[in-house]
Image (cartoon, rainbow, N blue to C red):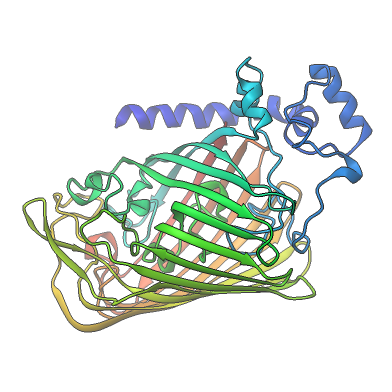
Length: 490
C-alpha cells in the first residue's frame, strides 16, 4: 500500500511542477482537446500535427456544422465548473463530449487506433490524491473520502473505456457503453454487495478496487423525443455529489451524501418528453447491491426532471428506492451480517443567478425497518480509520434519516471558482452513521484548473454532531478538516 501512496505522490507533484510547461502549450492543447473555434487555432493545430487532429469527421464539427442540441442550452460554463449541465443523467439531446485526453490521443495514433477513433471509443482516466490536517487523531469519519486524518493518500486511480451514444441525431438507433475501473481509498464509498465487496465487507481494507460503472446504453430516437435504455451498473442519478472526483465541486463530501446510494445495478429507462421535461423509471437490485448478492431485492425507481423556460431553474425529484424498506439479514463470512435496504425520496433544486454564480440545494428523506446501528456491517477487524467489528445493535421499528445540503458556486475566472457548502442532517437512531443525532457541516473551497489536465482544490470545513460524540471514532462532537486534493487526467 505504501508503494501506491508513493506512486500517487510522485505523479501528483510532478504534474504540478510541469504545469508551467503544459500551460505554455495551452493554445495547442486546446486545439487537440476541444472543438475548433478560430482560424488561428486551426493553423496552430495544422502546424503541430499536419492537420491530423484527434477527432474523426463525425467527432470534430466545425463552426456552423457543430451538432445542434435538442436540449436547452448548457446553463453553466465548463471549465471552470466540472459540469455544464443541470443535474440529471443520462441526458437526451445533448451532444457527446468531443474532448480527447492524452491517452486516447496516443492510442488513436497507433495503427489499430484508427478503428477506435472511427467508432468514437475513448480510453482515459485520472489520478486523484489528497492530504489533510484534522483535529481528529485516528479517523475523520463519519465524514467521507478523507477518512485518514493528517495524511496524504491516494483517493482514486481510474481507468475508463467508453463510447457515448449520439442522442442529438434522430434517424437511427445508437449503442454506447462505459466501463470504469477504480482503485484507491474511495472504493469504500462505491462498494456494492456482490461487486468485489469482500474487500470491505470481509476484510475492512483501507484500499481496494471497484468496477464502479459497467453498463450499456441503447438510444432509440423515435420514442417521445428520445429514449435511452441503460443496462448494467451505474452511478445513482439524483445526487449533486454522487460523482467521481473530477466531477465534484469539492474534495470532501457532505454527510448527506456519505450515507445514501452510490450505485445501482439493473435496467433504467430515460425518456425526454420535450426540452423541459424528462422522466425516468428503473428496476434494480436494491441500494448498492448486485442482483446475485444475498441481500438483493427487486427495487423500483421513478424520477422526473424539469427545466424552466428561462433555463435558470431545474428541479430533479426521484423516488430512488421503492420496496419493503426492511434491512436484509443473512449469514456471511461465518457470522450474522446483513445489508441496508432503505427507501428514500431525494430532490435537487438548481438555480442560475448569472454566468458567474449558481446554487444547488439537495434534500432527502429516507426510512428503513428493523435496521441496525451503523448500517451495512463489515465482518473485518476494527481499524484505526473506522469500520469493521460486525453487525451493530438492533433498531426495532422504523428509523429515519433526513437532511438538506446547499452548494453555491462563484466563478472567479476561466480557471477558478469558489464553492461554499452548508448542510444540516439528522440520523435519528444512528442507523446510517453509527451515532445518533443532528449534524451540521460548513465548508469553503477553491478549485483551480492549471489547464485541461491538472486541477487542485484546497478547502476547509467544520463538522459537528450536536447531540453525541461522533467524530474520531466517538471521541469528539466536532472536527475541523483542512486540506487539498489534486487531480491529474491522462
